[in-house]
Image (tube, rainbow, N blue to C red; front, side, top):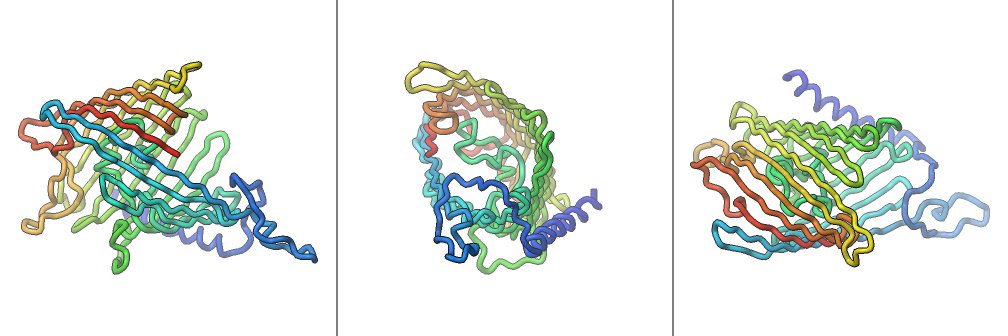
Length: 372
């Protein structure tokens, strides 16, 4: 295991540098059909027939937004609340056939404004090789990588919320290959500063993350990933394996994450997420396109974000061990993941001595999600 820990950062650095060398070595851009949705000439061709900007794919813009508003009721406390979980907007598109961009901001992430994605991407070899630089969600896990409108439940799993939720500033190299069995490899180096502490952040040791996705028979997706972070005084290494089966009627998924703290600063954390979704498409039902019935079990042992108590120097216990069972139904008023009404009930199970956070207790959740 020690050899693997020492070797993996070197391999990622070599792959990343190789991608940069490829991008600088000459005309490696493929001449395949442009995948952009709209093309508009930027300039007319010269009278001598020479190549001009008009012969390149045009600048394109795609605007998207996600609004998630919800109501929650905690029966044990007899209390409830309304909340705007997300008011997220993004602009993305292409500058040329080889260059993409994205900028995304959340105007209400639980009431706070947050700048999220902001990156440029260079596409090489018919878009099979991709070099991305900027701030982004790191390539790690299945569920934590889903955007809010792609989530199956009103509230995220423990993997997506507490253990594997990482955005950072850095660069990634992605490579897709294989036709019968498509494989996507992606790895990157990151500051470890998060999104808000970039200006005066300098480091001798980057964080890294790597992920492999393998698709079988166009139905089964297997994902393996590894990540190293350094939030405070010790390194944290995480290992994740997950898979899902999907067809138009079923989605069955299971994922396991292991989180290890260097120098035995905190006991290793185990996190599990498993759920099933049964879709019931509707025909000739005005205003309602689909009903989905869902059930989820997730678990997390005692968890620390890796931040030390300044007085004791020990890592803080942020989340006590808990089990959770969630049942729900989703009413899709538009296409699935476009206009969904999510109704969930979450039941939490703690040890007797645990002190659960106010928002991490039994509750009924009604969420209206709109994606445009």
